[in-house]
Image (cartoon, rainbow, N blue to C red):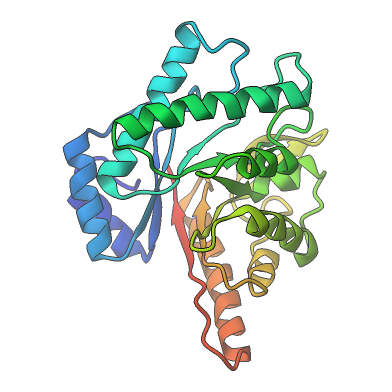
Length: 284
């Protein structure tokens, strides 16, 4: 969110910079109350800005025991994130899938799915049953691979895959340089998404070592580029919202320009209308 001063200032900044999507950033904690969220949602709808929410980093499911202070804090964080999303009309609520914690991958996935079911019941009772999105993670030996995310999504009816291509680039040792791997990841997500849901994508340049992410980079300093993503998206009628996680404004602008160029090329080469919307915003 480009401003925490007021909803008006935030939306004004987004409009001035030409963005039509923004992810509300709660990774490090909550800074927005419900009236703020409601007003933000009103203004975002007026300007056709797609909102989503990123839950606090400690708000993950798949704890070894579904009890104790850490589990209660995680549930509380996801509950409040869903409340903000419901108030503002944002979707999805992005969260991380947790950790293996010396378990088999199957046992960890079972725990995530089981705890998500309990969370969903709680949210339904509060009128906060908004869509959630589970993010592909950037460490090769931990929970959160593309396959893990697709499996969690497949076993739930309200959780969507969030494709973080910086993380995918890192864990593949830099394989995302042509359109084919982008297309394969999109195809996997497309197969489990409900028909009217957009792709939800995180993107930035990335530094990595030993197939693990180390840090987000200004666009152009690493080897990940947006043009192959734009090319891959041409094969899908599904809309796409792309959230830039770049560390600077110039990078977000460059990513948006690359995707817009690809979208324009696709529209020019197609004889029928396209419904895809590539919405890009900087998240801070």
